[in-house]
Length: 270
Image (cartoon, rainbow, N blue to C red; front, side):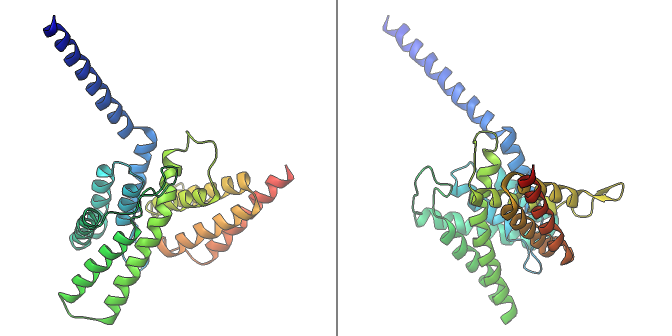
């Protein structure tokens, strides 16, 4: 009798373990997560002017801060850096992430409330890791002030975009689950998706740029849903990102800002 009870408990434990594994696999390959993986890969191939790409490491740190399984994002971001920027930039990404992981293990980050997007304060760990790797790479060769300033600037950008991605990732993952998002989350999600759209480059259909169409559509929707202020701000922000990362002319900033404001005005008049 005791043997039968033990066998039943063992079978029940095995069924529960299989259910847990099945649920985890479903969570990993959920549609919103797949879209997040795509955004991570595309954004990691975008350069920020002459400063390289600070986005891959920022995305990885943001997923860790949100307590999201970051393995797939880590691999895809590294792959994007490798394919777009070559071995040297990939090694920088690899060493920076390794130093970042070691720093998180050695110096426990501050835990925030579970209802906050940034559940763990990892910005300091990210900034220090990025600065260390950038400066060490400079000291192994001829030392130029320009390289030192560029390395520090890239580390600052990594920290800033980490703060943006922490809020933007939430919008991507919970778009169909949450009824409302704050303005900060909406703007952060918009910037995150825009960086992925920039990676499309000059791809066009019948002479129409896919990148421009998607960005204009996003600005119009934000202006229509949230009013003139959000529409104008969203248009200006997207225009600046396209100008710096996408190489567009300064007139693009004004065009996107005006588009967002017009959508906001039409929303008021409906």
